[in-house]
Image (tube, rainbow, N blue to C red):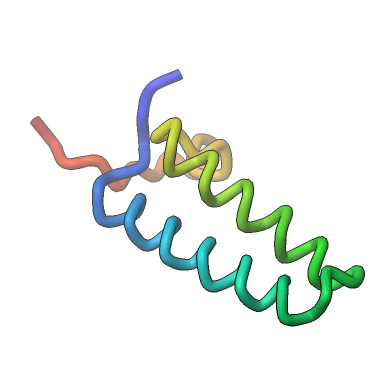
Length: 66
């Protein structure tokens, strides 16, 4: 699968994941906190791999063109 997540998009995803983890921790990891934690893990995973599966059917790419 080709990469479709650019550098700026990765930074935004990681920062948002850190915020979500903080909010989830402040909620004592109740049901909403667990869901926010899962969303944060997905954001970190997509930033780490450089591929967002939600972008594929929409044919979106935030990667810089070569």
